[in-house]
Every structure is written in structure tokens, then in C-alpha cells.
Image 1 (cartoon, rainbow, N blue to C red):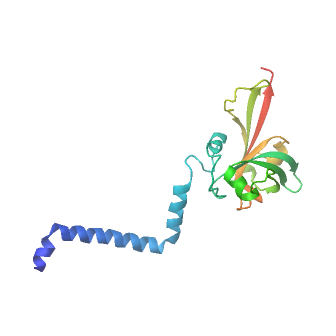
Image 2 (image 1 turned 30 degrees about the vertical axis):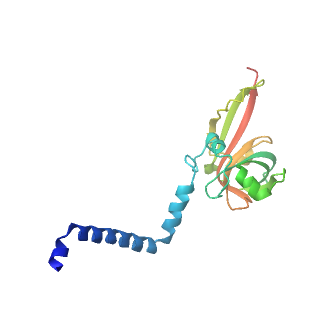
Image 3 (image 1 turned 180 degrees about the vertical axis):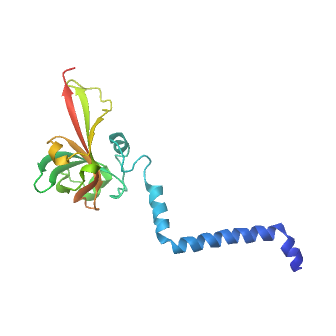
Length: 185
């Protein structure tokens, strides 16, 4: 009887399946962070990484499950304090972050630390005619990388970056400074 069982293809299929399942279970039980990494990567919107651009961010403007580790914020700059390395920001996107952080209040401004290194900071400019009314997406062009963001920023510019924590008390990664310049054309 044992000889017949060992010759059966179904016996070996079951052994193979159980071996694969057992091996996977052992591997995953010894690497618990792997499961969290897999979950996180499955929940990350496509095209968003630390090399995001404004189009990627706008595409996910209604992200409701905002995660500071992966989802950038967009804010308008309303004040600049280079001495304390802080900026007053009026948050624009994503709506999930704004709702989570500020509730239903219309006021979504904070003064926060900007901790991006020069190597992590870049400057983009979009030029538009003064009578621009089409609503077509703007196409900002990269002007510089490796900038001192406080030396370059002006009130009215926008900043995109990744927050250091859930409350976004600091933007410390992937700072992108955006400026819109109106032209006579």
C-alpha cells in the first residue's frame, strides 16, 4: 500500500504544495517587516515616489488614506523665515491630509520647519500668458537642482514635499519649489 501511495502523482503534488506553503510560512514568520513592506507597496499610488512631479500629485489629489511616508503635500508659501528654517504654508493637496489634519475648517495653514537638504531640493518654473484662462495644465520646467530653498523661495510660490511625521510639523524630503511667471505673450 505504501509503495502505491509513493508512486501516486497526487501524493507528490500534495507534498510539493505543502512544502511550498510551509517554506513560505517559515520565511515570512522570520521576516515580519516584509509583510508590511508588501502591504505598503500595494497601497502606494502608481507613479508616486520621491521623484514625483506636479502632475502625479494632482492626479491623486483626493487621496483619502494619506500616508506621510509616501504621499507628498502641496502648499502655497505665505511667509518665509530663513533664520528659523520655517515657512508659513497654506496646504492645498491632498484633501485626505487636509481633512485629517485640519478637519472641516477652511483654514489649513501652518508654520512648519523645512528640513530638505540642498541635494533634495529643486526649482521649477511655469510661464503663462497674463491672460491665461484656458485651464489647461501648466507644464513647469526644471530650472535648478541642489538649491537653497530659503534663498530661492518667494511668497506666492508653491512647495511640494514629503512630511517628516503624521502631523506634518516638518517637510524634510524631496522639496520641490514651483513658481508661476506671467508673460506678456
